[in-house]
Each structure stands twice: as structure tokens, then as C-alpha cells.
Image (cartoon, rainbow, N blue to C red):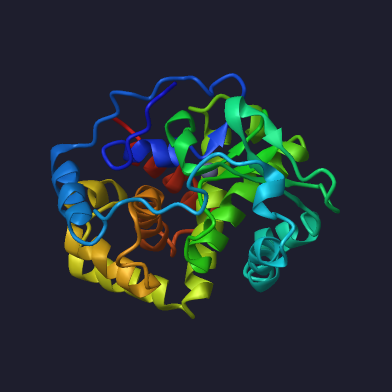
Length: 297
Ligand SMILES: [Zn+2]
């Protein structure tokens, strides 16, 4: 079992959002952020993000004890696709491709107590309970092995849940369509390019969910921060600036299981907006390079 620590392993949030059968057990231990960033992350978490993790599923239970066919569970997923399906050309592809889905829960020893009997099935969304947290690479990721989006909790705020879900569905779409990026080596431009696209989708959805407040807040932070280049963001960003971005999303006090993917997304989105004026091809290349920087030891 691989232990997953939330904050010190920021890179895990970025790298861990896709799991292939080959690299699922690849150890990322030892990933250490630069001193400045580590210090700022500690301060950031010590704020309102240090409260205990809250889970929707407290322990492993059987599918039929949960009532997963309750409309509310499926509705949260449907809401994400319907409400944000028109945010960008990519989300339009997602909304079209994943009109149908199954919902299930991952039970002991990796067996899926599945929702196969439920209608749908083009994509599976599997929730795993708190007692399995240490054995998963991230609190939300796409598993190529399971052909499913794996989620740690359903009680997350709808805006964050929607954004993260659409990020992972982009990986599902690339995998199901057999795109080369889905099976490329995870240090290649192709693989990272898929991450750039999925993090961009996530940022666009968060921005749409807040009626533009997210990108406006990022613009303010960039102006205040005076970042000289993409590479300087990680060495100059402060806890106060990250809290400003939480504030814009209304996620100032979310629990620890969301903090790690949230701060990773802030870091990416700062870069995304910093280079937004570049021509598309240059921008993409710059963001691929930036992704390498923010996930580097
Ligand atoms: Zn991803």
C-alpha cells in the first residue's frame, strides 16, 4: 500500500490524476518542493485548510446499503456535464460523449460493487470510502485499469467537484478514443499536453462556476505578484495569494482532501493566465514546460 500525503506531495496531485496499470504503483515518494514553496504551502494549509478530512463514505459498505441509485447522486454528475457542457470546445465534447454514465462504489480489495445494473455505462464514476484513502494515488483520478473516474468523496462543493470531474473525464475521453497522449510516457510532451488540456478545462469550469471571479482574481494576483516569468511563480507565490484564489472560488475553508488538488490547480491556473496572450502553439509549449517545472522535485 502506498501512502499518500496530501500537502507535501503537491506534485502527486498533478501527476496522480491519471493512473495506468503500468504506473499505478510507481513511487513518487521523495518529491520535494523548493524551500519557498514548501514554506508557503505550510502557511497556506495552517490557515483554514487544516481541519480534518470529511468523507461522504465513512467506511466500506456494500453498494445496496448506500442507495446509489438515489437521484441526488447521479444528479450531481449530470449537473456537472449539463451546466458546464458549453464552457469550451473541450467541454462540449465531454457533454456529448458522456451523456450516459454508471455510478458505483469501490469495496474491499479493489472489487467494484458496481452499478452495472443501472442504466448508462459509457463511463463509470466510482466512489471509494475513507478507509481506502491511503491506497489510492489521489482523491480524484482517472483509472485506465478500471476505466473509471475514481472519487474520494461526494460531499465536496459542487463547483470543485464539477471542475475536477470534467478534468478526469477528459482523460477518460482521450483513453477511450485511443489518442496517443493516453498511452504515451508520462514525461513526454504528448502526455503532459493532455494534462495541460485537462487542467485548462478545470480552470475554465471553475471560472464559469464563479461567473468569472476566478480569472479576475488570478489577474489581480499576477499584477500584485509581479511574476517575472512562468518559472518564477512557484518560487514567488505566497500563501496570501493562494487564499485570495480560494476566496474567489468560495472554497476558503474546504477540508484537506480537496486542498492538495485545489492548490495544484491554482498554481497551474496562474501560469495559464500569465501566458494567455501568447499565440496558441507557443502558449501550449510554454505550459508544457511549466507543468514540468511545477511537478519537478
Ligand atoms: Zn489530469
